[in-house]
Structure formats: structure tokens, C-alpha cells
Image (cartoon, rainbow, N blue to C red; front, side, top):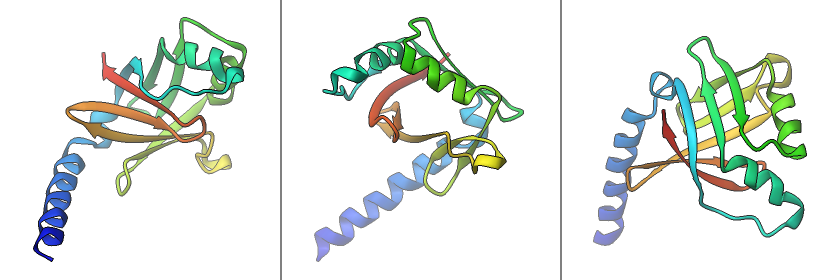
Length: 136
């Protein structure tokens, strides 16, 4: 039982640290993918993974969102077309960035933000990709 309370207190303390660092203001800016951490075995998604290797996420202060890459595959082009003229908002309760607009309920792209060993990871729930990103 002591171990349970010890683990619970550590989780609460680390959750408090993360919640102080991931804010709407701290997200604003450009985030470059520096590493694709979780590879997808599906050969049909090989090109989109390659495109994400050079992707840049831009979160503007006015809530505009932009996703670009230097290696634009057909699937990635579809994703960037879907996110054209979209907005972003941060759900502070679960560290999720929702991309879209009011009419679609900010449901085009869902980015779960995780900090692991000082590294920021964007988990894209639609593709199951884990991207290590760095603010530029």
C-alpha cells in the first residue's frame, strides 16, 4: 500500500510539472520534427512517414495552424489540404491540441503532447505516429 501512495504522489508531482510547462503560450511557434519514434509497418503509409520526417507544425498566436513538409507525398498532401485554413486549440486538461474549426468541432487532427526525458513528443492519434519535435 505504501508503494501505491508513493507512485501516486510521484505521478501527481510530475503531472503538475508538465501542466506548468505546456500552455497555450508555450505551444505558439514552429515545431520541427527531428525524429519519427514509432514506425508504422503498413507499406501503404511509408510515404507519409517519410513526409513527417521533414514536417513543420506551426501554431500561430491567432490560433491559425499550418502543417508543411519538404517531402510532400500524396497522403501528406491530402492532410495538408484538410488542415488548410484551420485553427488550433489546446485542451489543458489532457494536453491535446485539436486542429480544425468550429464547424467540424476541431476534429481534423488530434495531437497529444507528451514530455519524456525533456523531449517533446507529438502523438498523432489518427496515424499512431510518435514524433519527437523541437521548437525552432
